[in-house]
Image 1 (cartoon, rainbow, N blue to C red):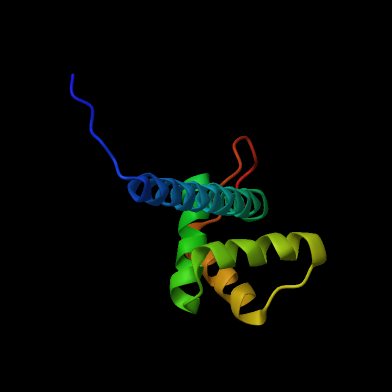
Image 2 (cartoon, rainbow, N blue to C red):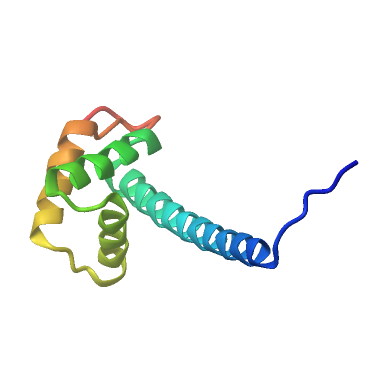
Length: 110
């Protein structure tokens, strides 16, 4: 089998590209975890399904023109501190009204 020959600069470029890709993947994993935690907050507090929690966060992001990851971060900060920007709070209330709440299994009807 013939082996492809590379110039020394090609290998350095490839290593740099791979390092950048690893950094992007790390950021994506972190972002995904933040969003998942915020979805969990929506599920617990809004009595909605995880799919509805995703829709709530997406809805707030679109209506406030704030990136979804940033909305999720603000939800998690609110969980720790009790502080939330008015725009996000109002957006969450509106979105929860549109997408939930669902009935808790076994609970009496409201």
